[in-house]
Image 1: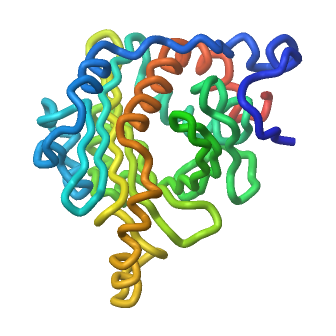
Image 2: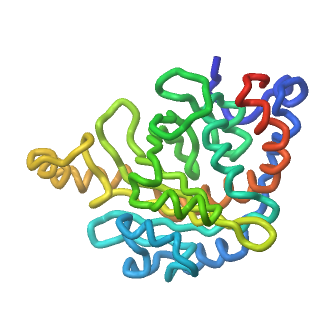
Length: 273
């Protein structure tokens, strides 16, 4: 049974299968993230919209790779580049299916913020596309719950054949509020190989035009969403805290993901762990 608590118990650390990978001391944030936090809120024109996501497969970088902004429609956009020596993109594709099966796995990712994770459909297999992960975590001092509904990169407009040919992985998801039809926004993590490892380009678009009520926006729902915009704005996370959280969890897990994958990545599909 999942216990809604932070951290590992002594028994989980000493006798559980993942205990040796649990490290309550987080990896430090990468220097460019610290510099972006000091820079603060930036011009929204520097942050492409969600419709521009497929251009991530092109060589080079976006105008801002790490930072945050608040757009005129009250939405927030949070981008983060994480450099990952020794990590291959496919390891993250495996991770997103593997970690959602139980809280102990999820806590490895961010020991100081992650509380629980489970699949909404109750299954314990490791497919993630087309499924919803129900998570509880802290953003700053606030305890948050979210429903992360994963979709294929093709639904985002990516050429999946090109991604495969380039050795790249894109994890895409719609983010909602559990138990409600409210969809707060979109997130994706683009991983591409670079010399000595890979880099993750995380993108998050929440609120404003990124929000919806239900799967589609009819005229009534669009009007209701517009009327709710002042309220929904108050529900959005602080963009600086979201940037910190993303930067911390990605850098932390990257430090031991290759060993974790070597230990569980080959056996988990057969049910040995």
